[in-house]
Length: 136
Image (cartoon, rainbow, N blue to C red; front, side, top):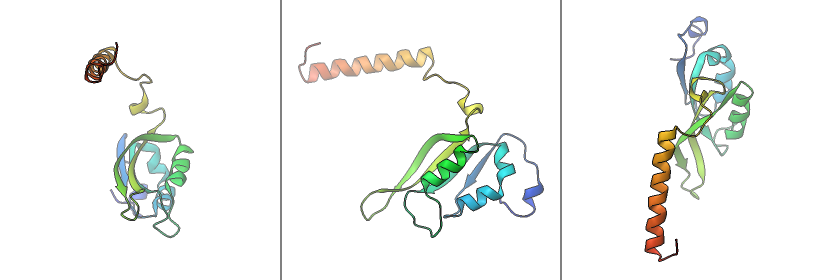
């Protein structure tokens, strides 16, 4: 969807995904879409860790803005590193509502997932003990 004068008065069925990649104009677009933001359950933004765009916000600016609206980081992916020094320069950040659908569970894993993970860790530990002839 594009935010134009005509979309500002439209209603979108909730919940929906909102994706923005606006090369340094993130806060301007987000400020102009405050009502639309309220209905979004999943917001994907490309953010910068360096001031590549004059006047453009950095990660911490976006984080503060989103947090003040009840949105928190859910995932980080598509990391980009600048060739100059391989420093993290940009990333896609997923924000979700703090009390929304994707954060309704406040535990790490189901019992079955935890058991599988513990079994995997124990097998790995045994392999390391055997490989390095450590005592159990």
